[in-house]
Length: 150
Image 1 (cartoon, rainbow, N blue to C red):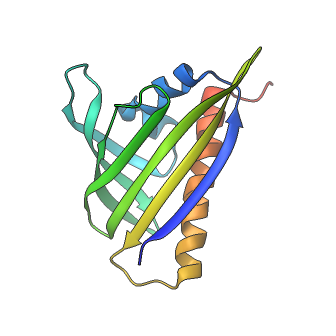
Image 2 (image 1 turned 45 degrees about the vertical axis):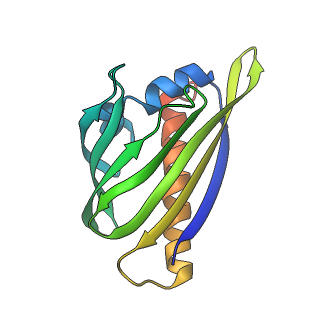
Image 3 (image 1 turned 90 degrees about the vertical axis):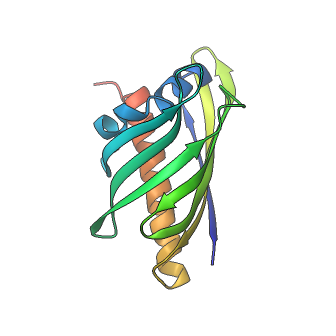
């Protein structure tokens, strides 16, 4: 059964700054700790990653999955769908970026995710994992783009 989750955060960066980070797939392992390896398998005519393979830590093991990205809504929307996954049937989602301030620039980032795992898990366990994944992704994105002052 597909579980849907949504989280949002306001990040002190412009949508274009966030977009640049979100489409720099090969750099994800430097700031997203659960992502271990990323390979862009296919690029569009502008050189943007369209088919991207991931290896990540998940539920105490390593998992691999491949996503197809749609850049039509650039630079305010980055949706994806699962092409292939070893422990999931669905891993579709999107980042939506909405400017909310100019001085300093800030952006509301909405992260939506629909997950259906091959492994049967109780709903509350799946939901807890989704919330953790999304919370960590937004927190790590924020720390990478707009680190706290020292």
